[in-house]
Amino acid sequence: MDRNVPRTTSEEIELYIRTYYSLLRSSEDVQIRSLVEAHAQMESLLHPGAREPVPDMSAFIYSLLRLPECLASARLVLLGQSREVFERNGLALDKGWARVASRARRRRALFDGQETLAVFIASHSDIDDLIPMLTAYQIEWNKLNQRLRRVELPASGDRVDLAWLAGVLGLSPDDADRLQRVWGAALLPNLRAIQAAPKRFAVRLLTSSLTDYRRATLAWYDHVEASAAGQVDLRRRPVYFVSSNTHSLINLLSGFALRHRDELLAYVRQGTQPGLEAEWRDIEARHVPSNAENFLYYVLKKYAHAPEGQAIAAARAADEAACGLLRIESDPDVFEVDTQLVELCRLRPDWLDPRLQMPGTQALALSEAVIVNIDYPLGMAAYLIVTQLAARVAALRGLYVMGKAATLNGVVGDVMIPTVVYDEQSHNTYLFDNCFRAGDLAPHLTYGTALDNQKAVTVRGTFLQNANYAHIFYKENYTSIEMEAGPFLSAAFELARPKRYPSDEIVNLYHAPFDLGLLHYASDTPLSKGRNLGAGNLSYFGMDPTYAASLAILRRIFALEIARVEDARVSDAVVESL
Image 1 (cartoon, rainbow, N blue to C red):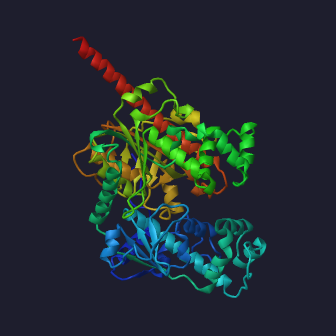
Image 2: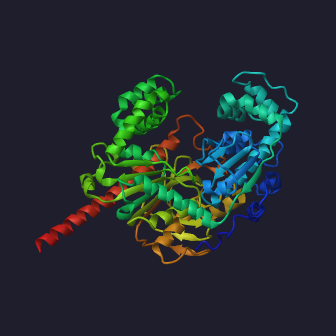
Image 3: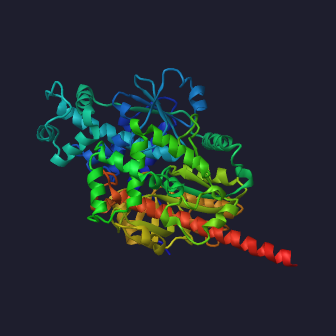
């Protein structure tokens, strides 16, 4: 079985990984230019044009969306696991440093306003993610710099003539339009910054011991426990662990958006969010098959973050507290992974999304269980978080993972349900009984297809794959590529067996002492160069599978807890009769 699966991604990728880890052992700054050749040599699927003189806008935009915007001014990137690590290296991050964020990657980062960016990392997966993105960003910035050196840019204005921009930069009209949409009013300032000087990033890893990663994870969990004190004592409560996001489960469980439908639709009719009103008219007229509940959840997210939505945000917080939903922002001194706690006994059955209604939901009032939902971590942070949490809770009844993946056989919006995972971290092939089947999602999927009995590959980083690598796995019927399944299953092994997870083995996780389910929704199709999720404005190719997967997870937890409560009732009745 799977004897042909390669132990490593490819020689070129392994060379690249070895190169940057060997350089990062230095106590001095590492220049990104020393990685450019190894980066280009691997021929990444995300950066096929690395060697070409023409800018590769897909790689550049992918990187800049996942890196803080201040990188246009930054020169030095410092990597550390916690505020304590930065302070040990002489950096007082509370003095003159400002919080900065990226649009498409959650990672705590602070900028000194001059040239230094401090980035908090949760595991070595953050290094495998960051270094290739910084390298791609620098390569493409410098290509643009070469083309802009002798160009006279417009003196002012929010927009640039796209035909002119495409010609100057050697881009297609579509790529020029994408750059305009991504940068918006910052397009001209950013072009001037690129024109002014080439990019010469330097990186320094402040410490790299596993102990520092574990210490940061412990601090993260201590913060969760302290924030829940007085409401939920996880040491005495059984837990269903979920890795998903911070909106879909809470929206479904509170039903808040559905009870405030009129107010949300009034906001839509204001026209402040382009496309929303037309989208709603199409849903009402059944011109599109989109789900009305999912639409309202999307609008609530937009409205609650708008200045005029402060009142509804406060009302939402009050309703969530009333039905046992607790939001916990991550510890500001370590990596960024937010947490939500859900006490099943305090849920309001009359508030639940209609798709969660099922026989026996009233019995949840007798459940002691808590759902612990975390905003999905990156790579090996998943292993560190689960092993830490499982050691501190009363019992783990279920482990469920919902995340994005690249699909090699489906389309954007499909949901893949694996039963085999090959993990590039441990080199293990994990076999397990996924508790989900296609039929659990099909009733809730409008656009995509649920594909069960799939095989997934867990890679070390999104850039760390090339066409040859993908084709080899596809020949072995591996159909999705992602970053977290392997680390989660390595943690599951240690929760079920009396030893550390092995390496380079076929690992049987059947009959684990807790429920186990993994769902991956397709965000891109690398072999066909498909669009990435979120390329449009309001995309139900993202909303649709997210809520279908969330519904499957919550319905599974409800069914297990209802059955457990009913069994306890029967047992109590038998005891009383004796």
